[in-house]
Length: 94
Image (cartoon, rainbow, N blue to C red; front, side, top):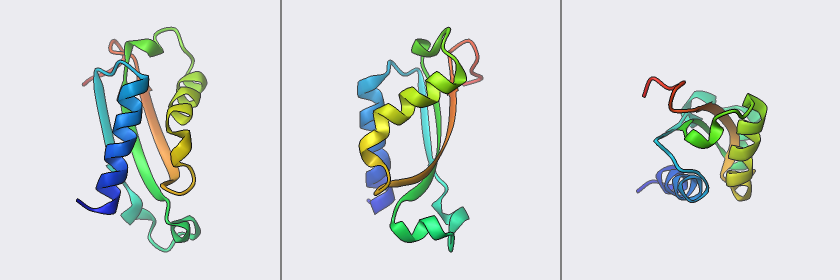
């Protein structure tokens, strides 16, 4: 297992312990940012798609804050940048 695969497994563990997930996908997009100044710190670039009924009635900003709170300990060492797509089951196509 690569270092980024291990990181993703840890992110998934923390998200699953925080939310009742109906869908979770974490993509490593670090290769798209090679040479970027932030890449030098060792933190990766990730794209996260998360679906949970807990986001029902919650603003987009609050959803992102909740995800950041769940992954807080991984910043900045493991995560330099994070794209978040956060949905309720009724909003999701997954």
